[in-house]
Length: 215
Image 1: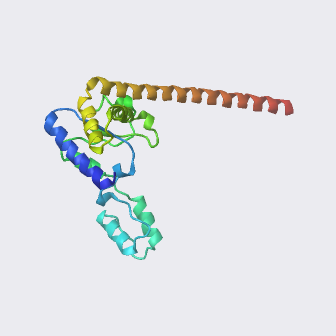
Image 2: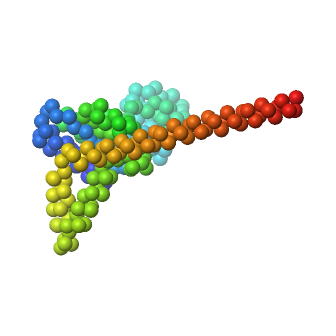
Image 3: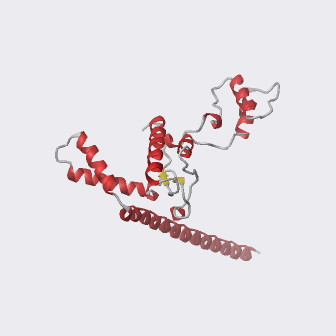
């Protein structure tokens, strides 16, 4: 799916969810870091190195950055990259039109219950943390087990049937599983840090003993 189609899907889905769930209902959209999810708005895009000096200068002036009169292209690019505006994403803007608050940050899934209406951006290449991957696998299994005619229309019907029947119990189980995986990674990190500190401490003791032997 390209960026354009994904943005259209977010707009359509956000509108539908807001109408179905009402103005006060909490909504959480969980997305990964696919490139089509991260397209920046036009006014926050960084300049490209292929741009002419005139374009870079215009971009700097739009962001109210003073431009030296005799600056080279390399100096203008450096100035632009040092004064980049805060990133804003097209997906966030579309969701915001439907009163869905936007939060783009790498948050631990254990915090998912603490935030109300947000878009989460998961770590790159860590699909194991994404509960959607579990739902996706279950839906594919359902389609495979029930697709006896092997028609594309049946695939779509079965996928929609599975999604419609998904209730809070399995959805919560997907989130709990992802949170358990996160806790496992935290314990592994803590253990690795402890082992690293012990190794460093042992190395320092050996160095100290060797220094005493040669003194």
